[in-house]
Length: 253
Image (cartoon, rainbow, N blue to C red; front, side, top):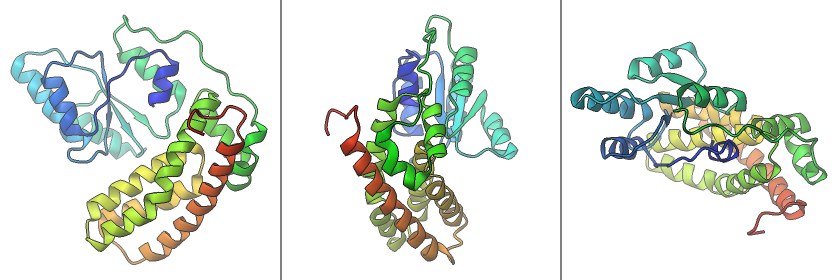
C-alpha cells in the first residue's frame, strides 16, 4: 500500500499497531482518512476503530473515514468491519482500482490523487528466474496490482527475501513457546506478502497455517510447515538472482 500511495501522490503517516493508531487520532493527528489493517499486533483494527468511534462520540468530533484493509474476503468479514464502525473495505492483495476508488470516495478533496499512473509493462528478462518458480502470469498480475512499477516490485521482493528467510525460525520459536497468537500473525503476514509478489502456493499454505493456529488445530502443521519451507527456499533463491541481475537495481544491491 505504501508504494501505491506514493504513486498516487498521497502523503501518509504510519503506525505499527491499533493501539498506536488510537493514540495518534485521539492525540490530535490531523488526517483525511484512515486505512486500518484489521490484523495487527497489540490491538487489532476492529478494536482500534471501536475506540476511535467512542472517542469521537464522547468529544463531539466529526466521523473520520476509516477503510478496513484485510486479507479476508468473506461477507462475514465485511459485516464485522461495518459493525466495528468502519466505512468501507479494501481486500489484500490490493487491487489498484479498488484502492483508488476508496481514496477518491473517502479522502478530502484537498489531497487529490495523481492524474496518471504507470501502465503495466511486459515481464522483463530479469524476472526469468522468478517466473520459473512463480509463473509469468502470477508475476504479471502482481505488477499490475502495483501499477506496473518495476522498481516498487523489486523493493517488495527485497523485503520479502528478508521476511521469507527468517519465517521458519521465527514461527518454530513461537510454536515452541506455544505462542499461537504470534504464530497466527506471522502466517498472516507471510500470506499477504506472498500474495503481493505472486507467490500463490506460499500464500495458500500460509492461509491454511493461519487458520490452524487460530483454531488451535495443529495436527497437520508439521507437514504444512515442511511444504512451505521448501517453497520459501526456492522463491528466496529466485528472488536473490532476480535482484542481482535486475537492470534497475535497488540502491543497496
